Length: 308
Ligand SMILES: [Zn+2]
Image (cartoon, rainbow, N blue to C red):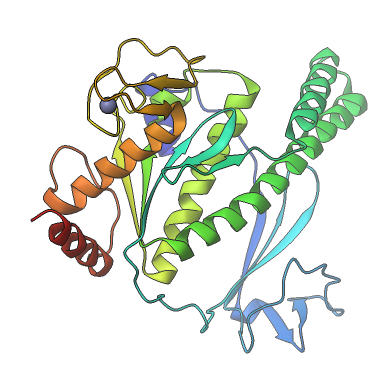
């Protein structure tokens, strides 16, 4: 609520609206977990659970949270220690990651990761469900509830698919790279554009970032978020020359000073990477957000060797 009001008074967001969150937390005395069966306090039978994945071998949950989402689905999440999660041996690889609307992510390596395949259709479905809901009069009890559930279900489906993709991506990126440079998107930037595509993209960006950060902590990697005060799209990542106007529809361009042909998004990702690495070397110009000392010094040494 504090964040919501701070953003409201900072004119970055609308007046906060109430959002009910149905969930209950059980500590060790409130549940029993035996032979893979979960029984909550005051229940005689174990819960019938569809597992998203098995618990790590030998894990004993310390907290169990039961919640219900807007689409009416019930979830049980268990907090446990996984002894198999250990820092990976460090490598010197680094990657810059740029987000966009036509591609989910663009990497400084030149790789582009497309948006989920079904999303355009899902989005159309969501827009339709939202129109149906808007048509229902305020007092129209049962039908309105039904329409709202429908919107929530479509939302949940889009979010589920996105999350699944984001988990696979973040796991891969964190395992492959010692240093990951992302852009620090501010709230102000995020509310400027109100399209549905933008809203979904923004929501998954914050989810992507948080997954990247906690997985980096698990495996001993560094995530650096750089402020986007520099013109990452217009700056030539090869020679550093600044190009002129660059409207959004310009996807490829050629640098006037060095003649390098650029893909707009790959060039931006490369500039992000360079800015992030500059932080690890001299700490000037941009603001690093999170990094662990170990891997960072490895990166520093590598860079210093390359540029005597
Ligand atoms: Zn150039």
